[in-house]
Length: 573
Ligand code: C2E
Ligand code: CA
Ligand code: CA
Image (cartoon, rainbow, N blue to C red; front, side, top):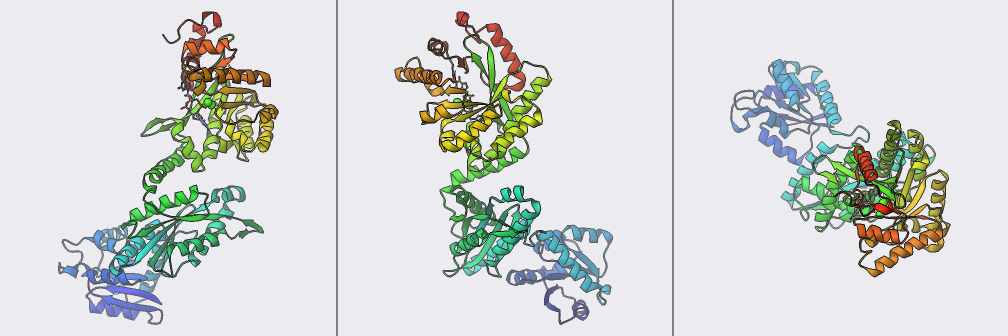
């Protein structure tokens, strides 16, 4: 049965509507005023509205519709989410355009009511409204309709003193399925998940798709029997069941964040925001589960969401650039290579240093795309310098632990080498001790393949982690970098001095080069030289600089001649 609400005072028009519609498929309600209609719509759902515009504005006795003071936009705004047909004795073309702009799906002159035109108009209005308010892939309400339903549900809950829950559902590993099995498979997964979530809820609850792999379930009328947690765990369980696609099983799971009305928030916007924060929390603790919103998520989680969203956008829009810091051979003063250090060139906040976004990227699982982007920037820069016939320098790229342990690291490295045509020997990767000691056996394999590919491997921040010397000996490494915290105090802290000397000796013993980082003063440089540290980098020579300043810095360093005999010349002075 298609439920129609007729709004208007004109009895003849109502009679014409009733006559035009077959009573076995259409049931027509009638109210006389807009006020009565909006009260009724708060209680009951209609499939379509027919508004008699000749007097629809007359609800408050202000005279006929279309007359002075009649606000079309406001009137239609009230019924934005219900398919609406405007009825009038006569329409000017301008009015028809305006009606459509404000959200009416169709308009009819009353003289046309008597024939089939009305049923066609109703069907068109319903399907047009459907296209505008539902997601075409899953058939679920979209974000706009969800907000309308949520606002409506909040009003109902307030009136009847009920609780309601907003469940923010985000799929884990969806991107992986989409990337590895293809977009058609991805679509299948989304459709299947949509119907599984739908099955976990009552008819009266709303499930919407926000876009991508994000869904919202709106659970109204909560009581002991239907608790938000029960629904959430049902969804988690149901989504986790394998999904068969063309004979293959895809496994996916859901992370859910829950915010409650009125306990956590009372507005639609806030409920959405808080459930989103709780969802992030659920992801952080491993996904495939649910979390209730807690006020202490506010500061940290919410701030992170803001930055996390910006970070995703930044990756899409290539807002990153590399700065380069030269490495000097202390024996002859020559520049032997550059370390590439990433900066986020944020459109509003300016340059953001890596410490402020690398850990976040790791946490949000964005390190793979970001790391790959960084590798690309470095390889492209090397190729660019080669094209410009600049002196060829090795570039070291930092790899995070997460990146190192990704299956496709080697593939990415090789891809960039092939794509840019750079010599693999010009690429170096810096890894921390902890990232290779997490799983030394696996690390040995990856390091071996990097080294087979011709890529240099250096252990970064050496001395801050716990390296097993037995493994260090077995890994195909090229260099150790002494962490700058030891270099900093090397001249006035005896134990730091001893650590630096030990690392240098260890490196020599293992046949590795040794690089001191964070060299800021001449005294530090002296100490390093006196203890046979061959390579150094730090502010004493140059801070990291943008690509177009690199050769200017190198020229300056060469003019200053850093060979040991003349190292008393103060640089930058
Ligand atoms: P790191 O690999 O130990 O990099 C050296 C850091 O020390 C850089 O900070 C550099 O600017 C800074 N530095 C260089 N010389 C001196 C000096 O003489 N004195 C002092 N006090 N500092 C000096 P930055 O660029 O802020 O990078 C910080 C950390 O962020 C890096 O530490 C690295 O762990 C990470 N990072 C930077 N770029 C990337 C990247 O592309 N990928 C990944 N995964 N991590 C990166
Ligand atoms: Ca480094
Ligand atoms: Ca370092």
